[in-house]
Length: 64
Image (cartoon, rainbow, N blue to C red):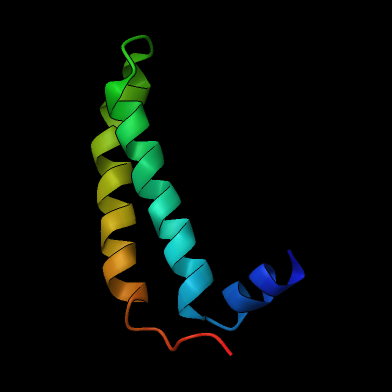
């Protein structure tokens, strides 16, 4: 856990790609659930933020 947080703080690719992938997955789950309208409403934005974040962090340096 400490290594993960250290990678986030030092702007390393691995941990930030994991966060971006998790955002994309959460956005897709929000899109597919049929019960809560506000989750569905914000699902596209969450997925888009995760995708743009993944594109940006793919240019970060690889971890140690």
